[in-house]
Each structure stands twice: as C-alpha cells, then as structure tokens.
Length: 634
Image (cartoon, rainbow, N blue to C red; front, side, top):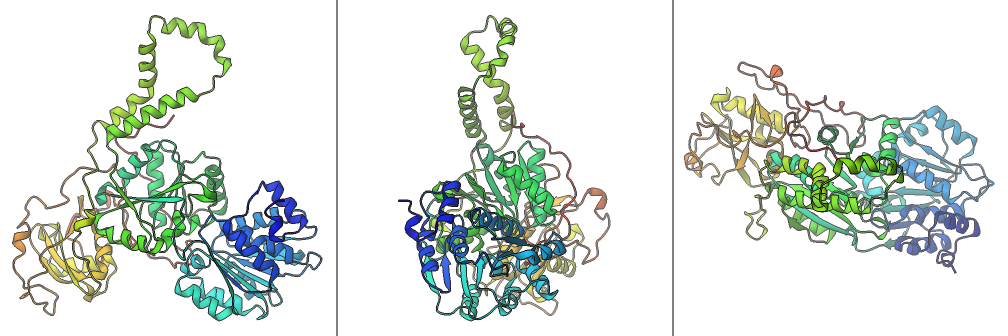
C-alpha cells in the first residue's frame, strides 16, 4: 500500500503522485495532510524550505475544492513571482486528473488585464503575490469575499519583504469563517501577530525545532580581509570543481557586479535580481536548471522562487541584514534528504553574526581556511584525471586515430599522460603560483575581543586625513553621508595629516566596517580599524563634535606613508567592493574630482522599499576585463 494512500488522499491525487514519482511523504506532509483532510481548521506549520510544503497544503486543498463550482474558493499568497509560478505549476500537476479545476497565477511584471480575464473565466484557486493581489482587489478585478481557504506560503519572508499591510488588507477582504493555513520556515513576531489576528485556535505542526536549520546542511565560514572577498569566492569555486551553487549578495548592484566578474573570469555564472525582466529571469532559471549556469548570483528576494534539485552549495558572499534570512538561504541546498553545504565569507568584524546565526539554527559552524593555490591545483588535477577516466569514448574519432597515432608516435604512456593533463592543468598552476595565500585571517574564536554593545561608543582609526583635503567638519559630513547616519551619530572626529579618528555608538560598528573598508577615494582604498583607544577619558566632545583627547599617537603616529590600505595588492581591475546597503560604485579616474571636494558630493545608492526590488536604480555599468584572468573551464 502506497504511504500516500494512508494519508487519506483520493484516487485522482494518488494517480498524479504516481506520475510524479513520489514514493514516501516528507515529514511535514505526513503531519499536515491528515489534519487538513480530517478537520476544518486553521493551521500553523513550521518547516524548513525544501521539505515539501507545497504538497503538504496542495494535496488537501485540491481534495477539498469543488471543481464543478467555477467561483474562486482558495487564495494562496507567496512572496515572489518565481515562487508564485512554481506553486501554480505544482498545483496544476497535482490536479491533472481533477476535471474542471483551474489554477491561475497572479503576479507583477505581467499583464494584469490578461490575468483578470483568466480569473473571470473561472479559477477555483488563485496563486498570487500580495502586491498584485491588492492591486486587483482595488480595481475590482477579483472577488475573494466568499473563499473557503487562504494559504500563506513562506509567511515569514512575505512579512520580511514589507508586505504586512497588504496581507492584512487582503485577509480583511476574506470571510471570517474561512480556513487559514500558514506555512513558514521561522516564526518571527510579525508572523505570530498575523496568526493571532486572523486565525482561530489553529492546529500546529512543527518539523524539527522551531527556526532550526536543516539537518542535511553543513555550515562553514571563512574569515578574509574585506578586499579579498571576491578572490576568496573564486578559490572556493575552484576548490569545488563540480559546484552547482546559489551565491547570495545583499543588493542588486552587488549581484550584477559579482556575476559579471565571474563571467569575465571564466566561470559559468549568471545574475538573478529584480531589475531583470520576467523573460530574462525565466531564461536565467532555465539555464540554471539545465546546469548551463553553475553559479547563480542572486538577491534574497529573487531567490525565493528557486526550487532546483541537487544544489551542492549555498555561498553567502555577504550575510543578510536580517539574520533569520540565513535559514531561507541555506534551505536552497540539502533538499529532499540530500546533503548540502552552506558557506559564509566574513570579515573579522562579522564574526559575532556567526554566533547569532548558530543560536537561531541550533547548529555549529565549522571554521575553515581558504584553500591555497597549491591545494586548488591538486584538487583540479585529480578532478581532471577522473574526468578523463569517466569520459565515454565517441567512436566517430576512430577515423582520425591513425593520424593522431602518427603525431604522438614515440611518446611513452607516462609522457603522454603528463602532456594530456598539462594541456588543461598548466593554466591553473600558472595562475595560482603567483597568487598570495588568503588563509592568514583567523577568527580566534576562543580569544575574541570584548563584545561591542549597542550603547557603547566605539573609536575608529581611518587612513584618510588632511592630505585628502579633509578638515574635521568635512570628514564628519563625509562619514555621515557615506554611512547614512544622523549628524549626532558621528562624534569625536579628530583629523591628522595622513589619518583620522572618529567615534560612533556600537550599534553602527558593522555598518562602519563593512561600508568603509575597501571604499575607494581618489584612487586610494580606505581602511578602517577599531582603535584600542576610546578617545581618552579627558577627551570632551565640544559643540562641533571635535575631540580634545590625547594619546592617539601610540596607535601608529602620523602615518606619512598613507597608513593602512595604501597597499596596492589584491583584487582585479574593475573589481567592485563589498559594501552593505548604501554602497557606491567605484568611479573611474576621469570622474574623480581633482580639487578639494565639497561635503555631500558623494553618490549614494538609495535604499529601496523592502517589499519590491523593482524600485531600485538599475544595476551598474559593465566593468573592464579583469587582469590575471582565471583559466576558463573547458
């Protein structure tokens, strides 16, 4: 007897399940389906991404729908276009043997008139993104006042994207007596608020521990200098020749930049973000599913619809702003019981975030070092040998063998193997033998510095000063604009000839370290470090914010050489640096002002509303071809 039969599913669903090749229900399906079939109840189900939640609510929903009634009976809300289309396709597959049942996807980026027309023809199930659904309600193009079921899929992510008001408005337009089924990976306060307001004594289903990570995903982190982040990403890719991964960045601009650089350096990569048209996004996803793309660089919003089997790695090129989002990212791998790896690339200042994530997912990270060039070459050499061994011979080459044998005549077996391997391998060894080791950074978790609390003032050293045409007021304005802080958030600004000091409260430390480190100013890379000197107990913040303290000289004196960051090592030409929100593009030399700059003259990328990526300005311009290009994969 099929295990799905034991859940109480009818014949039409069991036929579809057989066609799809499903054999055993997942844990969330085993727990949720009987409850939803046997009871008319609200439900809160907490389970990780990739555990089969769509089928968990899809099967009982289809069985409860009256296919002969053409009115809308169910609404499924999901956070993104990709996920909306994915759910719609799955519901259609599940209901293929249910005559007369129609499911319509309603999402932005497509014709609202055509979607309204499809709904009007008769759609018992509507799958929608909150923004487009609210638009259709406002225009009177859809009627959900009599629905029987409302499903909130990936509820935490919808609320994290800023859809709270839309969801509340949509649910307020539905009948009180309907059943609401809420599926989520985590249970933050806003999700609990929705459940309390719109659900009545809901049944609860939890797979694993609340908010915990998947047991099939291992977690690793690598500590690097900010300027080495992109080089570290390349080395991790080279150390995993069969990598099939999603690489996460915070912003669309970073996503586009990293993808472009990977492509320039010979990797099979593509970008997925909100500035792409729906056709472009569909094309990228088709290439990724077909494995023409090995490294998909994506924003959190765009990646919500990614449901691709056998993703080997998730790479956190930058950690998300919301720590809870890490769970959604890592859920892209280790799906359907298969093993996966989640990699995090961090700087020393971000180590505390690793600890915070460990507490949430209830799993420990393993700290590893970036592989050296020699280690990568060894891995690539063995990979090439196995690839040669496993290659199936195409006998169409038989006609050419006499000529080939004549060319290779006189070579021993050992010489032939060496030459064959060297054809591919020499490019790697030539590339990496001149590269420096990136494994010098260590987190030293056992002897970490004191934890910086939000209310504590933090003193910083920065390698720009009077020689860069800054006085204390201009530097304060620069920091305020660059870091998007209030005027009083930057204080004790003390400008020296070749360097400066300033203070912020501890809550801004991550922003200061991640935005300023590596930022390029008039051809120089800015470097900022936390000073061991807090500005001096006798130092007073005057009405201008200027420090009267002493004792800074012991931190390094007047660094006439330019201080930290004056080194010209690391990175590729055209490399765009790792910043958080509010990051800037590196301007070309012709764009840089040659004279003294006025405060407030720095470009800023405006932060977009979290509910949509479509309002951000387009991704940046193309980059120069990289120097020292990595050998292209064959």
